[in-house]
Image (tube, rainbow, N blue to C red; front, side, top):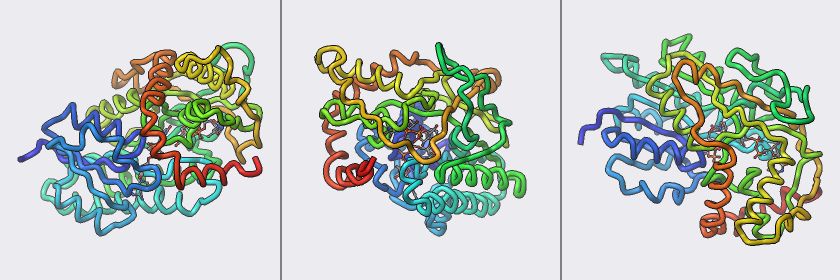
Length: 366
Ligand code: NAD
Ligand code: DAU
């Protein structure tokens, strides 16, 4: 079958990638969607059970750092678009093991860029009709102040905009910042049609349970402590993952080359307030007495270099491409908690065995 477009999505077996793959496979039956994923601890093909047999879906187990394989895939599938999500994504792991983050996030992105460059430049039409879309994070901008810590959000007067200077603090955000620079350098140096987007914290189904929201839902269900870093006063800006996938769709198709777009929900929460909402929702859905799991909250040693506040201004994306979040946070968190409680087998398959040991090691001494 001849497809209208042939798109590689890297990291499609991960949290956000699986939602992007699902959206593209279902919405564009005339596109071939090639999911390239190494299946690290964070990659899980169970996230894609519902699309794995689709005729326009192909899975390739490969490491983006493997330049020869990346280059071969470009030609094998006549790739004209790349949506690049594959990365090491967890800040706490980057503090313990920064090399893995530099390898995948920096060298892996470079390997993919160079493979696309050599392939596209070998074609008669060159870069015409091609797109390299790199998914990045708001963490590259650094941290904002809490100038209005009390009362209603927003908790500060400043927001990250597309022109905010990069100022990453963690090995994770430093590696993502570096990869963003490489992507822009490939546009400026070789004329590759690139786009970078920087998104805030995502939440929703299929997130690996080392991240705050699924970890805490699972710990409440199992009556385990909820480790709040520091005083729980750090602020994050939360976006439902399917709204991120919708934004990626709009930007992949209608975004302008060489542009940067911020993606976020104008939805700031102090960690401790968010945690209380999670506790309340899980208790209600499990039929526990209200507030009965609040005693699981345990304040632990803060994350090293813990960024205080992230807050994204996504008005450029709304103004230029008409995207805005479709879901209110109250609805999103209700759906999310419900999904994890209804999919305990998915969770238990991850949290037993090696991961259990890793988790215990991670919290030793906190
Ligand atoms: P994730 O950790 O859930 O998934 C990452 C995926 O990449 C996994 O499937 C993993 O197997 C794959 N992968 C890792 N190294 C690879 C390699 N060398 N080769 C091929 N595949 C590899 O991550 P996520 O939370 O879904 O994040 C996806 C992307 O979005 C990342 O680039 C991240 O920086 C960015 N991002 C995440 C968030 C968030 O809140 N989760 C917010 C903004 C941006
Ligand atoms: O902002 C976008 C980023 O959001 C993405 O680029 C990252 O890939 C993604 O992991 C996420 O980073 P965070 O560090 O903000 O997410 P995490 O879920 O790890 O933590 C959210 C907040 O909760 C943060 O302030 C740290 C705190 N926290 C986290 C964990 C896991 C706790 O207090 N206790 C915990 O056990």
